[in-house]
Each structure stands twice: as structure tokens, then as C-alpha cells.
Amino acid sequence: MIKQFVPSEVCLKCRGCCRFKEIDSVWSPCLLDEEIQDLLDKKIPSAFISLNKKLLPVPNPQGAGFICPFLEVKDNQCKIYEFRPLECQLYPFLISLRSRKVILTLDLNCPYVQEHLKDDEFKIYTDYLAAFLNSSAQVRILKDNPQILQAYEEVSDVIELELPDEPRPS
Ligand code: SF4
Ligand code: SF4
Image: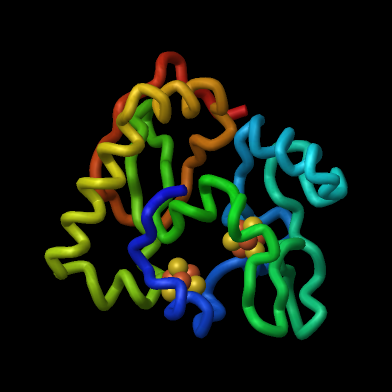
């Protein structure tokens, strides 16, 4: 599990994550192949996984739009928190592919990062995250899972990451 920058008690009071405007939202978490297999091994319905290897949102029972099928809306809890996907562990950081560069980016829509961008802890955390993602094991995971390299728009660049050979979106 990746260390978190945003404290969990902050996220539990926030409605910023795990909710989507469209069923095919680019923000719905992308899954590694091994995460898909792990979910299926745990008897998670395959209908929760889209053909393009993302979690497939379901209609929000409390209003407009869609939610992750693993979000418990009444208390804002993730039902698979202990084994949630890499992309969920990373957020509000995202791995972006742009002009054949792999870049650690940040979604400034997260109110917590907006408030803490200039803190020493932010620099310490991004150094930790970049070192983690640049480890040979993680670079290999990115190489084996090109679906995870997405062209997210309206995100802020943090640092360029190691480039797996031949990255290409699925
Ligand atoms: S937007 Fe930021 S603070 Fe809100 S739930 Fe997501 S990560 Fe947590
Ligand atoms: S798996 Fe959990 S953390 Fe990830 S989007 Fe779904 S509810 Fe949120």
C-alpha cells in the first residue's frame, strides 16, 4: 500500500472522490491486469469491470450522476479499501502519459492538496511517491499495464517519471 498524503479522516468528510458525472468517465479508476484478476478471485462481479479495464460506475442511489460500485454512499467508505486499486491509492496524484512522457500529475480539484501545496510535507511526499513509482518493480508494472497511462486533462505536472519501454494506451 502506498503512503497517503491526504489524511483518511479528511477524505471521509469530503464528497470529492469516487463519484462521476458520466458512466464512462475518464476519472473512473483504471485497473492493472493483476488487480482485475484479484477482484475476480474475490468473487467481485465482472459487471463491475469495463472492457477497457476500468471500474464501471453505477447510478448514484442518492442523486444525479454515478458512483464507484464499491462506494458505500451512506458513510462515504470504500468497501474494498484494503485492496483498492493503485489509481485509488495514488489519487489526487495521477500517472499521465503526454507526448510519450510519463508524468506524475496532480488534480488540483482536491481541496486538501490546494491548501497544502506549499507545505514541506508536500515536497517530502512527492519525492517519496516519485521514488516509489521509479522503482524497477513499478516501472515494470506500468510497462505491463499500458492502460494505466492515460492522457488526463486539466492536471498539474509534478515530476517526470521513468519511461517504460514502448508505453502505449490500450
Ligand atoms: S478530493 Fe481530496 S480530500 Fe476529497 S476525498 Fe478526494 S482525495 Fe480526499
Ligand atoms: S475502489 Fe474505493 S477508493 Fe476506488 S473509486 Fe471505488 S470506492 Fe473509491
